[in-house]
Image (cartoon, rainbow over all chains, first blue to last red; front, side, top):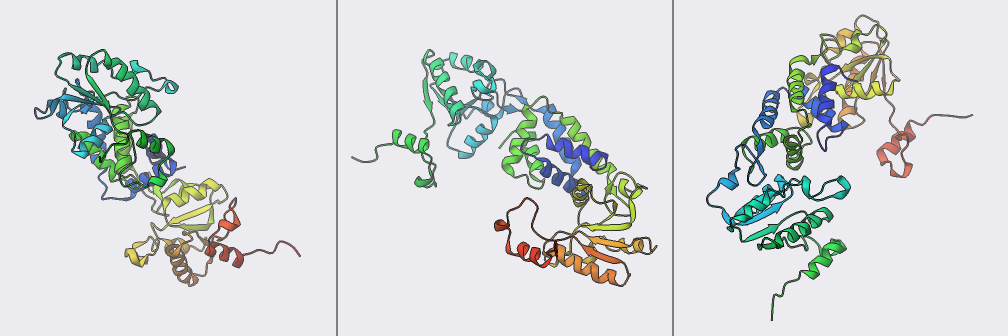
Length: 199
Length: 199
């Protein structure tokens, strides 16, 4: 449709997740037409990311060094490991500033439909981290959906043998939400997980 | 939040139009985690676009040569010029395969609120194209909104002096749409532009 390289850019952008043909076209023309847009910086960062980013040898999070900033931080509480599915979950929890422990990134969740079993996940790397006896509690923070729940129950069975405390993040009503708009499963879990606050 | 270069990539992606912080994060992790994604090709195309793409000297469309493929095509009907706002409008019209003439890309529409007057648009380039007398009709295909309409009436007044036929694309009900869902302005225009089909 377009002259060579513009169409190539649209095609390449269209390969990105969540970028459809219309968005790809819009982004491409923005890049072509906006002289202030620093295209060389984006290109440089793209190449640097692939070159420099690897996965932390300890927790599996994205990192620019062998061990990520969190694992290397002497101020983190080494008795706690929070197990998450993706690096972006680490970022989400870090933003709360309410967790001081370490992480373990699985790289996904168990999903037989997608052909992802325990062996495709970074579960093997978790076991040696518990062997020193330093870790007191493993907090399972996989997504509150079918795959996340399956992964959580698989892990809790596996960890029962190790003799470490295992917990799972609370499910319930989102703060700021409306009770009447909560779906039945969430509302059901909120009931099941209710806390005594008086008497 | 993230280790250096990943955050840099998220920031750079977030500068693209229509890409919010969440999408930028999602795209960045896709690039980091998907080994099959060819990041060097995207980086290469980004640089090539800025280097190779310019604007056609005749019509103002994006092009890799001084004159774009359409202007250079001897089979196009040189008696017709279709005036559009953006290069992507050219692509949209080309997809219909129902127009064989030339184009003229204004690079926007008159919008006093955004500080865009006739002088900021590629209107000056249109006049010399009409001087040869070869052009019989100028079809104004600016967007059917306030800015597009303002641009269309400005152009029609300007072109009245040149003595060329000026037309504007029909406004009306979109094909495949539902009459009851059409907004009042569209429905009003559909009435005003109705065509006799019998008697």
